[in-house]
Image (cartoon, rainbow, N blue to C red; front, side, top):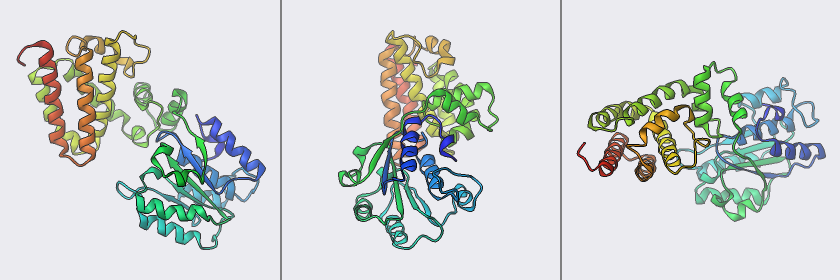
Length: 333
């Protein structure tokens, strides 16, 4: 990836270009912004620009350094990602030990910490020592959603650059490029992405669109049999990672129902292509019921991320939504 090819982050790329042109890239950068908007990709593009044989602040894409960085096998470019829930002290120590060595091939060694906010306290304290005395031939890039989730002593030693949510045209370009998505699937993916170009969305958008239609069909008639249908599907969805999509999409659906019920119009709807179904669902899910279901979705998601039994958590969610509708109608479903 070239800096020229980074889409939707013009301000951050322009700042990096100025640093490269002036030959003044600091020893530590902090890329701040939502996940899946190109922070890690930009960090690796910067690594190529710093180490390409051209040595002019650009990247050729064909020299050994560029190809190795692109393939993730350059000996002097490290990407550290969470091991499970956290970046752990052993990972930080391993990187710090390598930083004490002379680079094998690179002019500028580059270390990228993805999801840096997930450093546990021991790892963060250990990493602080590296930031206090960084080697002169090293660039450290921390990627995080928010500076508030990092130690002040870490953020104060880094130059921050802001990354924003991607505009829809940028998401459309990233998701549609060489992925063979149909127009219908691509437009669904762009709206569901909400400014984030996640890899799994590229790979699963077609399947997720089918799941969305199953959910809409069941929620259009939230009666006992329809919720039983959702219960039957819980095991299938939790046997894969599709449960994550189910909960993320339900957030958008109940949010859209609350928006419509609040009288703010349809311009901001995430599921705009299913506006007719949203209006039809208003009878079962007026704003206070939609908001109740939305809160239950958030609670179910939090529990499942903490390793609650996923199938049981989904079943409890369906029961909770059923109860919310029952209280609205005053009937027995």
